[in-house]
Image 1 (cartoon, one colour):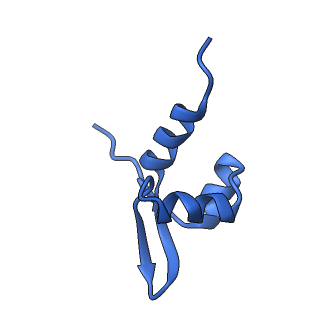
Image 2 (tube, rainbow, N blue to C red; image 1 turned 135 degrees about the vertical axis):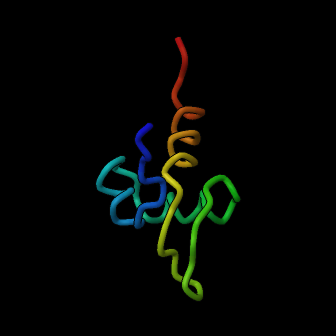
Length: 61
């Protein structure tokens, strides 16, 4: 079983998913996405949480 990386920097998330920093920060503040912080700065974001939020926002046909 391969282990996947689940914690990414905000910059990596922005590049991989095209999500702006403001939206990502909003999701963290709303408790939708887990994050690690150094002081007030978000240093790591849980990519599984990001995927779940995006999945919920995708319209189903």
